[in-house]
Amino acid sequence: MRLHTLLFSLAVSAGAKTGIALYPIRDHGKVVVKAGAIVEYTEDRNRGSIVSFLGKEIHAYGSIIPLDPDFAPSRIYIALQQTPQSTKDIATLEGLVDLADAALKAFPRSPTLEHIEALDALLTYQLNSLRTDGKTTSADALAKAHRYMIHYPQGKYRDELEWKTVLWTNEVYEIEGEAAIPLRQARAYEKFYALHPASTYSEEIQEHLADSYRLGGDLLDYGPDAKKHGPGEPYRAKAKGIYESLLKSGDPVRAAKALVALYNIQRGHVPGFMTPTSPPMDW
Image (cartoon, rainbow, N blue to C red; front, side):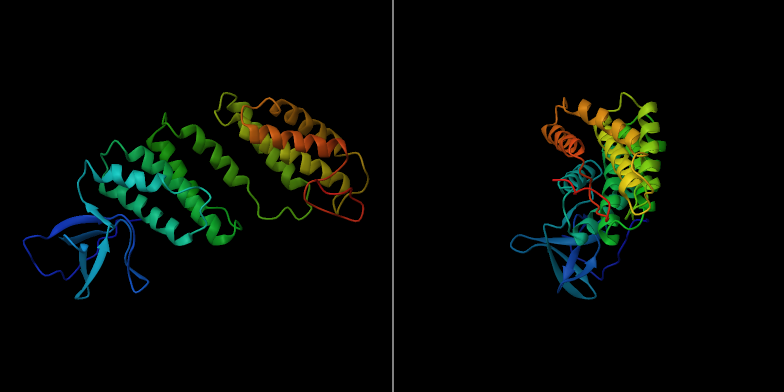
């Protein structure tokens, strides 16, 4: 995405400055200046930053920061990383993605750029997931993750983004009772883990792998297309072995989830689906 450069009919004054919009600027609820846009603004001691749009003064409050190549990228990075991954606010995420895209263009030599580029991929994925309810693969996020890995082959976030690209590529919105889907996911995760055994995301990879093997095995035995009980047992056995190893995880949430999964497997429960021939669903 190119840097959004907006032209304003700002009356020339001695106090006019050039800045970059840290957040979208709204007029009566409508965005008139996108995050990341380069703007001319004036500062008022009592009213804060003021821009002019179509001949009208708009109070930007704390939305404008100086276009200083040493200061601005770091301030932008702080704004980007403060947003929790749990946010469901599409407008907030749209502003952050616009801001990240603009910063990558405006400050190509900043030492903060690597952090911003990685966050750009992660925030883009988060935004697309909310926009589509997780129904489509985020091609933009995948492209940005690959761009980061080209720019920073030994980068700080390479391990994370390599794993995320595998996860994102193999995501599906609905399994719809097809055992082949989670088993295909499991093969992809297993292949990645074999190639990256020292990944700092190894436990997360193993958790996804166990969940996929378990679901695939249960669908083989009890799903809508199941013919008999038994073909899924080898996959459940693989899942059990992985869950047992995750009981020792230093992450208490991951260890607890593994224990719950084992408890349900041992009692013949199934995860998240119900057919006329299936056992009860998980507790």
